[in-house]
Image (cartoon, rainbow, N blue to C red):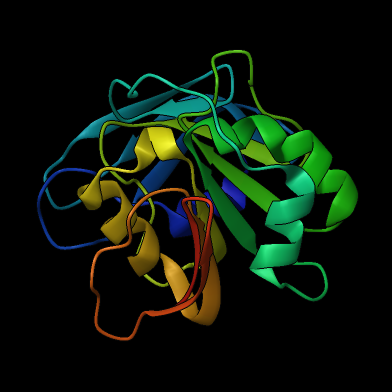
Length: 190
């Protein structure tokens, strides 16, 4: 997990958002290999082991119809910098997306078990959305994370004016505009 990602994570307990405190045990450059994230609101501690922050048990990953090329086109991002969250099986496309969109950091929320992170991707396992509101340049939601609570939280994590690619029904949300829909995939500007 990248040390800078701490600024974009939130405790998954049901309370107002607050910053998390990182206490690293082992670092490799800017990557946290082991340590603890602490919540000052509820005193919860989240372990980081092998570079993976585990907030809770991840829902099972399933297939996705999305491709890296489609995600890159639908997100519509220009230039490097910032974070994009990939929820569920879309996290399996992080390597291909890194090649298509260099300079962007990826937050893989509950990717397939085979993904352990890389120089450009951080893995987070959680039973609820662990990302702060209005903190991501974009979000991609795979069908395996298409429950309304996940989709709503994912839309909330997108910086205003940016997009989410959602492989599930999109709930009504103030300020969210569906730009396109086809084949069960929606592009939403938040």
